[in-house]
Amino acid sequence: MLRADSHRYVLKFSFAARTSRGPMTEKTSWFVRLWDDSNPQVYGLGECGPLQGLSREYGDQFESTLLEALSTFQKNNFSLPEKQEDALAALSHFFSACAISREHSSIVFGIETALLDLMHGGKRLIFKNQFIEKIPVPINGLVWMGGLDFMLQQVEIKIREGYRCMKLKVGGLDFEKECDVLNYIRRKYFREKIEIRLDANGAFKKEDALDKINSLKRFDIHSIEQPIKPGLPEMEEICAQSPIPIALDEEMIGIHSLDQKENLLKRLKPQFIILKPTLHGGFVGCDEWIRLADNQQIGWWITSALESNIGLNAIAQFTSRYSSALHHGLGTGQIYENNFPSPLLAEKGLLHFQPEEKWDITNLFPQESGESLYIS
Image 1 (tube, rainbow, N blue to C red):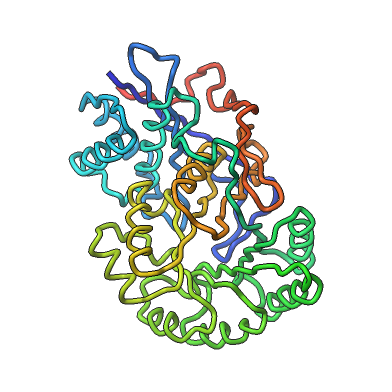
Image 2: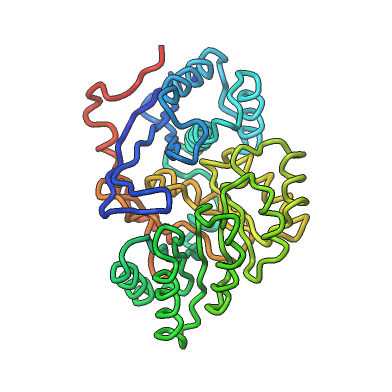
C-alpha cells in the first residue's frame, strides 16, 4: 500500500526579489513524499509551491486541501503502475474522482512528481530522457526588477556568464528607466546578438499598452509576456496589432478543459504561450497545452514558478521530453540561500544535469523531528 506525508519548507531568497506584483523575501513550498509500506526507505518526492497573487489555490485552506488529497490517495489503495503514461492517466482519473481539479495545479504537480519519482526508485529521476544523459536544456538569464544600476549589473553578470537570451521584468519601474536598460543592452552588447524577452506580468494599463509596446519595438524584442491583466477583452486586439510577438502566461491560469484551452488560443491567437506545471495543471495539463499550441503553430516554452531544485529538476526533465529550440525559463536554482544541493547546474545559458553530483535534502527532513504533516 502506498503511504504519503507532506513537509512544509520556507525557501529564503538570497536577494531582494522584486516583480510588478511587489517584493518577495521568502516562499513556502510543501513537499509530498510517497512510499510503499513494504519498503519505506525508498520514497518519491514532489513539490507543491503555490504562488501568492497567481495561484488560485493559494490561501489559508491550501494545507488542509493538500492533506485531504493525500488522505484520499491513501484510502483509495492506489497501486504503483509500471509505465509513466499509465501513472499519469491513473492520477488524472484519481484527481477527477476525488474532486481535486487542476485548479489545484501545484498539488497535481507535486503528486505527479512524487509518484513518477517513486516508480523510478526514489532517485529524483522523474522522466528518463536525454536531460539526465547530460544533454542540457537551453535557458534564459532572468533579470529581476530593481534600480537602474542593479538591473544593469545583473545584465552584465549574465552576459559574462555566457547567456545569450535575457528575460527582463518590466512594468514595476518608471517606463523610461526600463527603456534606458534596454537601450544600454543594445548599445553595449550589439556584437553578442542578445535575445531579449520582456515579462510585464500584466502591469501595463489596457489604455496605453499598445503605445508602450510600439515604443519598445526599437529594441528588437523577441516577445513580451502578458502585457495586461488576464481576462481583459483588449488582449485580443493587442495580440493582433502588437509589433512585438505576444506570449500568454497568467492568461491561461484557471483554463483547464481541452475545449476552453482550444477556444482561448483560437480567440487570442498569441505567437507564444508560456507553461508552468505548478500553475497550468501539472504535467498532463501542460502536455495538453503543448499539443494544442503545436496544432495551431503557436510557439511555447516552459518556465519554473520559483520552485526549489526539487521542482525545478522535475520540470527540466519534463521539458526534455519535447523537441524545442527555444530557451526555457529554468535558471532559477540559485535564487534561494537554503535551496537543496542537487545535480543541477546552470552554466553558459544551459541547464545541466550532473549525475555524479548528489542530492542533499537533509534540511527537509531534519532527523524526522516532527516537521512532517503525517496523514492518518
